[in-house]
Length: 311
Image 1 (cartoon, rainbow, N blue to C red):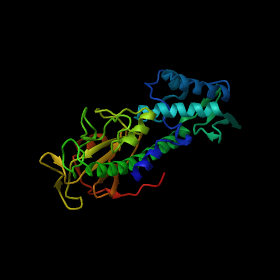
Image 2 (cartoon, rainbow, N blue to C red):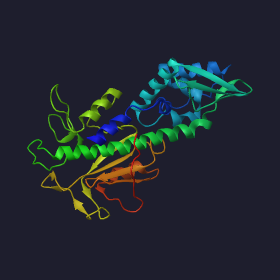
Image 3 (cartoon, rainbow, N blue to C red):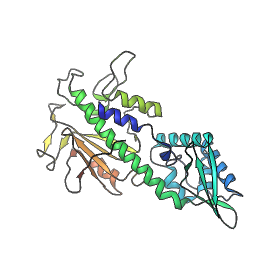
C-alpha cells in the first residue's frame, strides 16, 4: 500500500498549516478587541486558543475571523489549535515595523499571517490581511490530502478484492469505507492485537491518533467527505456500467471526495475509479448538494485528470 503510506504522511502536517484552522466557534458577540501592545494582543490570542474560549476568540479576531477559525472539520481545528499553541510555547517573538507587528512562533520563527496594527485606540489584529492566505493554505493542504487519501482507498479496494470477506468471492469490492459491526463489508474494521490490519487499517490507526473516530455516520477527514460510487456513467472509460451484480460489487468501484465546507475546507472535488485515473472539478457553492445526488463515477464535462504532488 505505497499510496496508503504516502497518505499517512499527510496526517503529520507542518506548522505552516497549524494556524489555518484554529478552533470551531460560534457567532461574534461584540466588536473586535483592541490591546495596549502587540505583546498583550498575542498573549490574549494564545490564551483564548489554549483555553478554547470561543467568545473571546471572536472578540479578538472579529467578524472576519470566521473563515479562518472554522474549517468544517472539528478534529483538524482542534489539532491545529494545539499545534499552534505548542509552537508558541516552544518559542515566540514579535517583530515591530513602524505601526505594524508580526508574531513569530516555533523554532523556525514562522510568521503568523495575521499582522497586528496600531490604531488610535491601540493594537488590533488585521484579520482581513491574512485571511485569504490562511484559508488558501488550509485548502491546499486539504486538497492534497484528499487526493492522496483517494489513492489510498484505491489501493485498499485492490487489497480487499484480493481475498474473500464474509463469504463473498474473491474479486468483490467493498461497498462501504467503514464496516458495519461484526462484519468485514467495508475497507476498515477493528482488529485485535496480532491480527492482520484491515485494508485501511494503517490509515485509520494514524487518523485515530489525531482524534478521528471510525464510525458509520458521515464525518469529514482533513476537511473532506468520501463516498463510494457503485456505478459509472457514459463519460467513464467503457461507458455506463452498474458495478453491482447479484448484490456484489464485482464490476469495479468509484470514489468521490468533496469538501465538507466549500471555500473553507476545500474548493475542488475529486473522483477516481478502479481504472486508477484521478479527476478533479470545482463543483461550486452547491458542492454538497451536488455530491449528495451523485451515484456514478462519470467524469464528463469539466472533470480534468490530475496527478497529486508528492507530500
